[in-house]
Image (cartoon, rainbow, N blue to C red):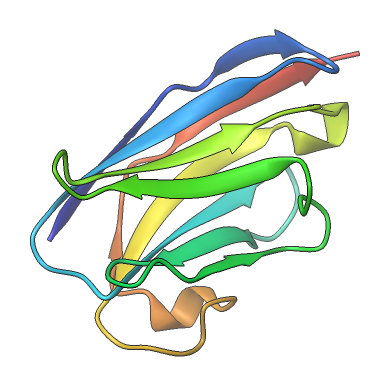
Length: 120
């Protein structure tokens, strides 16, 4: 399984960005995580590849939406109402089993990350 994240950039607070994660290979779940400078990697959102159940961190609920396009093998993270504290490198990751959606250790494959910078 390989993942390729893209779509990061610089945006003003209150703005929007859409991240994409191109996935090759079969996966059960795909998640987005982020890591800000000097902080630990944290869960953002996840989606089940079939069925489409979604999971969100409380900090992004209502602002971010994760979705999938199975025809394109791509997972999207639509980020609205961005805040400076959303600034981080965002990683997409894939896991082969159900459960543990919020925990990085349950994801087996990771993409290279894309930087999101939100200016105040």
